[in-house]
Length: 183
Length: 174
Image (cartoon, rainbow over all chains, first blue to last red):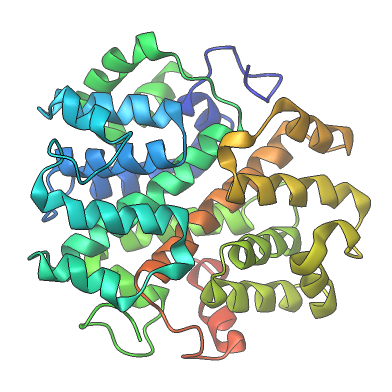
């Protein structure tokens, strides 16, 4: 059950933003640009980072939603399952491993990051913009995971695939617009 | 030294948006809403939460600036220092303590949150909106602390006073 007495049982992130929707226009705009705008990382790779950050934080709701989006963008289901374990396993593309290692440390022990961690990403051929974008996606999900878990939002696995498909099509800004028109 | 070769040694959060200039305005707008928008929490309380979360994440860059911001808004520096040391023993009003406990847990072990944590906040007289706003400040600093730490920003590159003065969300909208 959500921790907020006025929330319905099946509350989701739209319910949370609905508490004062007009305030959060900047967040939807930021999210769309970050997750779908121009970047050295493909939208699917950014969703992969979203899913990995969420599984590290044990946020089932965001993990389920964002892996479903990644699947809608064509990533393999077994790759997304493998995020729950060792990212050095074969399912994870070689090119993403240094980025995911950075994301893991940034999520779990952010104050321990060093120049050597960044250099490992640069040495794999990624540029500064790529690392910056990966960092910002990871930071965004450290925000969203806590927003979801702080309000006690419950994951409903049977809804993940539909939700993922919809978000893959509509993007991050559209969801907000749709909800506004419903209000 | 920042981890990014193109960033200057004294880079601040503002310089990071140069890497992806598109996102700057929306992040500033969000900062203004969360930190200074209408809320059951005062701006001083929100800056105190910002400083506390930053300390829990060991982000000196954000801690220095937001502790200073709280002081500028009338919070005693000694009070901030007591909060980050042991919030339960700090000389703050009792009603604020369940909020501090909530954001500490949400920062360190977010998956362990329970209804009882929220109920402790409501029992102290706070509304859902107050808890929502506290959660959003906590979320924002779990975001900003990671942005700062992951780019290797140098906390000593400028004084806390200067950092607080430069924070865009706290300035009038242009």
